Every structure is written in structure tokens, then in C-alpha cells.
Length: 424
Image (cartoon, rainbow, N blue to C red; front, top):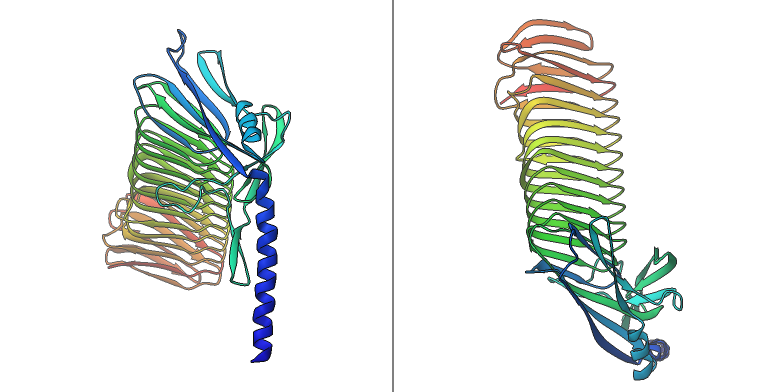
């Protein structure tokens, strides 16, 4: 009991000491001020696109009668005077070139090469997707450890720390209005960008910030490093390129092209001529979509559910699985070691190609097929049995037959995997 008491006192002492040290680090930003900068048109003649550039902060974009930018500068300092001086260093600069009008948020990068931005909570999120993280000591108190992003801004190398106490306490939140049908681009390197209810072609670029688009009529393009991309209720083509960020699209009408390094791709409740996902290690999930689907992953798995259309999938070690799938005329899957499992109405297939190294290949169709099938496996088992088969030829490790009217051609080949084709 005595030892427990001593440990408790020691823990409290340590916690108290660390708390004092933590509070001491906060004195550098004892005062915080907010100032407002504004830009509003009219735009110069001949402008067909507007662009806004910002280093760190939250960006909100909505429709408006004209182009307008409201910048809320949030600056900290050791006292009120220091915070005000830092805020005054921020400016809105404008330029135009080749039909594009740009509003650039100027930061004093010649004086400060590191900044801090705590992030903002929006729509119930716990952070901006900027790698914020809490560290707890002895279960007594917690501090936000944060993360950082290194990048170039105004041709200068800078670093933005999120959630912690390092860096100059300065960021700028933006509220932007864009007129209907004006092409719009925004660069917001660190911090969340929200774009809502727009009739515009839109491009968003971030380093670690998340990008959210909803109720948009027009094309939507996003380029992020570690930030996620979310779109909902989009009428227009959608493209997203991320490093480690995930991509989400729900309720869309248009082609989709998603390219990630390690991020996952989720498409749901949409349709378009071409639906493409290319990942390194990220998984892909297509649910309730229709269109020609193309997948290319390194180690990521492919999951298709309640979807319709042709399918083209290439993976290294990832699996390809489709449930309640209504096939288009072409189905193509090539994996190194991943399984291929397709279940649903496969009767529309006229071109079928499946090739795996060690993975199994399984087709379970609810309706009859109409193609000539050649199947082979070096060491795996073959279980192929459909009601309407003719001209069946079997040898050790190989099988050929006509299914239905044999209007198409199919090939299934595995190294050591099993091959199963059944109808239920």
C-alpha cells in the first residue's frame, strides 16, 4: 500500500512537472488576434477562370453573384502588439494571365519559414486530416503531438506544423464566392477545403488537407499528398490523385479516374461511362455503380458489389471479388497471387479472360453463359459444370466446352490455383 502511495505521488509530481513545461511552451502565443481582408470584383474583361492560393487554413467555397474572397487572418504572438504586427504582414495579392485571375494570400515567408495551424473541426470531424495526434502522459493529461508538412510557397521552402506548438502561429481561413459557370481552382496546402452547391468546373490542390465537394454540377479534380478526397452528389467527371489519401465518391454521374499510392478508393451509388481506380497498396471498393470498370493495383484488393458493366482488373497480389455483379460484354482479370471470384448474372459476357499465378478462379453465374471456354491449371483442380454444355473436351489439367450458343470466347488459366465454374 505504501509503495502504491509513493508511486501515485511520483506520478502526480511528474505529471505536474510536465504540465508546467507544456504550459510554458504556450507562452509564445499568449495573445491571438483576427483581422479580415477582402477582395471583390468586378473581374477584368476576358477572365474565364479564377484561382485562389493559400498556405494553411480552412477554405469554404459557395456560389455567389460574383467573385469574392474574405480572408480571416489568425495570428498569435507574445503580446497583442506582436500578434497584430504578424497579422498585418499578410496581404491579398492579385494577378492575371492567359484568362486566369488569381488571388494569392501572401505570407511573410522571408521572415518565417515555419508555421503552426491547429486545424478546425468541421461537419463532426475530429481534425482536418492534417495528421493531428494526441499524446497522453500517465493517463493524467494529454497534449496534441501534431504532424507537419514541408512544401514550397512563394518559391520558398516552408513547413507547417499541425496540432502542436512549433512554428509561427499564423494561418488564414478563406470564404470564397464563385459565379455560376466560371472555372475555379483553389490551392490550400494545409487545412480542409469545403466546396458546396456549385455549378462550376472545379480543381482543388492540397498537401495534407482534405477536400470535400458536395452538390456540384461540373467537373471536379483533386490533387493531394496525404489528404483525403470526398465528393457527394456530383454531376460531371471526377478525377483524384493522392499519395496516401483515400478517395470517396458517393452519388455521382460521370466518369471517374482515381489514382492513389497507398490510399483506398470507394465509389458508391453512381454511374458513368468509365470508372477507373489505380492504387499501389490501396484497396478498391465499388458498390452500387454501373459503367465500364477498370482496376489496377499492386497489393490492393478489389471489391465489387451490386455493380454492372464490363470489368478489367490487374493486381499483383490483390484479390478480385464481385458479388451480385451483372457483367458487361467484357471481363478481364490478371493477378499474381490473388484469387478471382465473380458471382452474379454473367450471361452478357462475350470476352472472358482470367489469368492468375497461384490464385483460384471462381465463376458463379445465375444465368447461362454463351461462349466457348478454355480452362487450364498446372496443379490446381478443375470443377466446371453448367447445365448447357456441349463439345466438352477434357485432359489432365485442361477443359474446353461450348456454353449455350457459344457467341463469345473465354479463357481461364492458373498456375497452382483451382478453377470453378457453376450456375445457381
